[in-house]
Length: 167
Image (tube, rainbow, N blue to C red; front, side):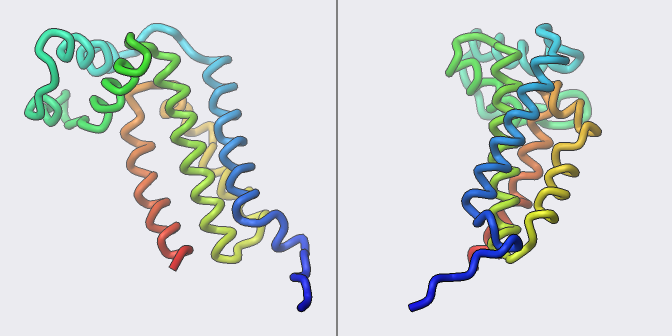
């Protein structure tokens, strides 16, 4: 029985690549938050973050409120996320929101790179896709707690690619 040949193309493996990508994404976003974060809610966050917590504390959880319109859109995922941060940390912590974003991006980056490596793509293509995924053009998503909606839109697409890779 022969051992598989390790070349630069198939090194590191999918799992190691996913862990490395996840750690890179998490570290990158936490460093950006550490450097550029403003610890006061910004713009829509007053109504969506603080308003969500205030409404929950006054009236409890209400399913119809979850889907109630916020300006020109509905934000049930964001409201659930804000509520989860409040229930875990006991306050409307802006820093916890942004570190939660970093965890979400780490999961997205890890799954994405794992799927690409499982599909046999080279490590340099995975690296280039991470550059696009973690681009500074997403600074609003990284630094604004309300933008969790955009992370949760990307996650199902990444999971669909992963399903193809696992098939």
